[in-house]
Length: 295
Image 1 (cartoon, rainbow, N blue to C red):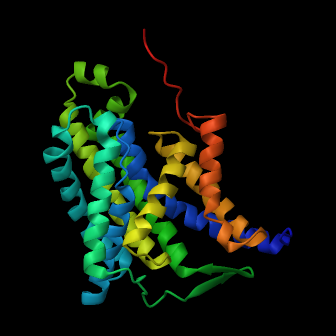
Image 2: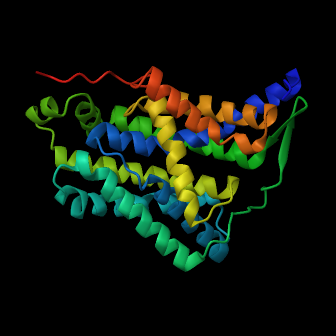
């Protein structure tokens, strides 16, 4: 193990920030769903991979750019999430206690279906700029990662606008802060839950589209991605979107540094190390709140 040069360190920092922005988009839906519904959606990784496969098919059939395909995958997944919440999760008693089992079963079903259709072959989407790089002051910036970062930032800004500037978004934020108080002032919790779950699933679709052109994937890789996104929202604070963004950038940079300083094979372990340390040292995460039992 040796420390990188200043040039290599800055190059690694740039790559870490770029991939961290994509991680933030991937994790945003997971933390949003938990913030409103207190549901840990273990199927989030399966939704990411499902979005990646849909993007792959659109590219294979119509040569549709992965970024443009987001305009198709997000509305489809929003409808899918809305129906899933309305006809499945809304009928489950005590979803806060049973959500892990239900979403775990859903993840296995989706993984099995994708495995039956696409087999276990690793796939990826390779647009015309997949190998292109931009040279900026001697630093190399892969176009796919830069495009993924910019796209993730745009989607996150739209998500921020929806939550901050729309009436339904204010209802979502009120529900996150205090569900009982929100219900007393006329907020329909069932509608907010359906909208939030649908919005979270649709952001997973966008994240999957970006994932498809940056990484290879197969049905079984959904387990790796749900583990990474869970580590991100635990570090950032369960239910905190700003926390998820900060945690994504931290883990993205640390993952890249580990690959350079130690070895590429150790870089995925960074997420699990931070998850373990966060649960031991600061269980509420960087920007989460300590939950106190009333009584």
